[in-house]
Image (cartoon, rainbow, N blue to C red; front, side, top):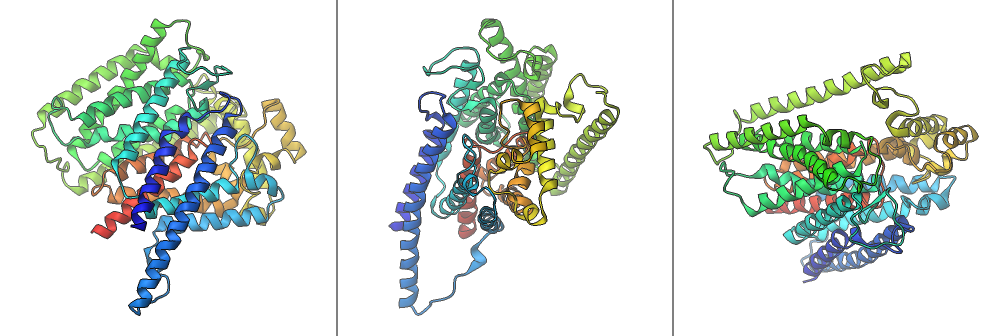
Length: 524
């Protein structure tokens, strides 16, 4: 009975966060970061306290039963997964980083407006364990996350074209939907969008005209999510799309029909660019963001329309041609491994080509084969991200050995940066009155804030979780969605950062994934 109560409360908490949290605002966009943070923290601390109490009661009951049966034994750590261990080590390192920090007040709560301090991180680590131990996989939480995120994306599209369904005290073009600025919107999208997009490749039937309701819903959702990505205007969204399609191909590699099905989300991506083009035609003066961006250039391309049409025709043709509904491997598991090796090789080749071209451009001070800063590693690279990356590198290099291991303290990037006159001067010159709170690269920010140890444990959480989900995904397809979400989060944050609208969701999703993994293990 007490475990059932724990499951019900865990599910209620997840529905509250996935269903209500994205919409919560106080005084419109005034201090939206603080309002979101306080809402999440208050709900999460209450949930942590109640679930911890339920866990203690469950443990006492278990010990009493063991005592009656004369089977008392020491705690068995064999039930801890590799992800569990990394989360525990990361939480321990966070505390040590806080203890040895020179900016403890900042490290405790986090920089004002961002709040990525010790309190939030430890709360997320605790929630990961509590959700993974109490939540029993159910569809209501999934549906809530998909439906609500779809509404949030739709509001983002409307806001971009000055169609405001929600009256707010302050309106700025930099703020969209109910989430805040572009970076926050993209961060939320990179974590939640895979939940409704990935199921498109899992269709087992070879008859595409025999639609299952799930495919139709996911098709509409994907079109909305991709269009929202094109509307918001940030080039960082292309990293998310690259990670999403790479993840889909990696998962689908051993299966014929799944590989064919990957053509559908790609065609929807092309058509979403054309939908953006239609919106620009219908509301020529409504678009309220800068028009010189990669998203709009692609939206206006006839080539994207031709590619999307050709991809859809190929998808329909291959689906009709395929007579089997058993979703057999291309030529067995070995072909899947070969396909994945090819994907890994292509990714490595693309990264190597970008690095070589960037080094050539940077060494000569020119932008060869590029009319922007993408291939020129200077302070203006990535819309000013180059200056932020340089600052992060300078901070880490200047740290003493102990700080390099433990870091300056959770969310202490800003305090450390502006305490060093030379770095502060460069940042003021690059960003003016805006205060830089991170390196716009999560791993580099993590190196500064939590050191080498913290970055290693943090990265270990994601890599171990993603690998385990992919390994067990054939038994429970929901694990594939979570693996892609984690991969997209890390990839997008190569040029972005953790904040209160992406980090909490990915930790909760990993807790849900761990719950599914544990339940599958106990049932096998």
